[in-house]
Length: 400
Ligand code: ACO
Image (cartoon, rainbow, N blue to C red; front, side, top):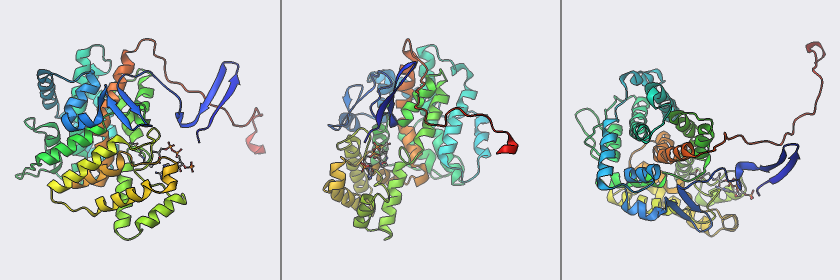
């Protein structure tokens, strides 16, 4: 179904590849995806091994700096994260300026971009030390900004970060602690959040990553490039899909739709089965497998019986044996089970794409940096096949 055609111009041949399905935009050594076989590796390490044995912070270091850190390197980076978690007091005024029900994704992208105004020394990164500083700031502050945007949207007082807590624990603390009553997430909840973030950490040239590279190709700074990535992620067909899945499961649970009706409507193309299908995976998305197991374990450890898990499994079971899905190679993607984990962690639905953004941040940074280090890069500037009117003479207002 990919429309690939070409047009010969005086400048050469322009190929048209709608949605860039078969167009390579760069060389990259960060993430390997084999969509036919359902394989995903970060810097060569299989996603399943990382999800089982690594943590989100360690995976951030792997993606961004290229290798798994030593114990000392990881401890030093964790200290940097702790030291940079707070926001500049002036930046706090931005939160007061947003309306109470402002979408946290809009707040996140705006405040991340404004970090450039508070860090003028990092607008033109020249050394690895400056880069490391910018990485720590972004990775640490994105979690603070995300939690503050939730507290703002829920009309709750802000809870400041606590550097003695681990990355995931600190985030859940800022989200859910209340004055005089600290939220202490279980180890299983922390592990589930770490796994959720880790499997989202990079996925090569997806829409948001390509956006970061597109913006970065003009030599725009890291904060601006990443902020553009957040905007690209917001859409329903990308990072917004996880909340759309939960909405769909909710409609089924509330009796507006049966599982069978849902599948039939999808086959009649009335809507898409959210959390299914992928541009690259024509097999099971390996991230969906990790997250399905993660959701099942988390719900069991919290003694939660979530009807959404049963509905999701029923949908998956029917779809995997239905010719419509089989012939189009449509399988569950990363978003199909991720919402169940977020629900179990009490994350509100409007925060789902924000959670995706926190997870994807290291991938965006790694790609921006890879591009930044390349010699002979060119500004990204695709061509088009013009289909508008041919030359015509200007029409005076009185004659229109
Ligand atoms: N439900 C029903 N049919 C689907 C679905 C779906 N979820 N996805 C694709 N199809 C069908 C299309 O209608 C098309 O059918 P046709 O050949 O009869 O016209 C065929 O499968 C191919 O679909 P394309 O649109 O060409 O696939 P594309 O690669 O452009 O889109 C995408 C990929 C956007 C992920 C798509 O599968 C989709 O919309 N899925 C639902 C949204 C979703 O879950 N997004 C999250 C993606 S993962 C991520 O961003 C992290």
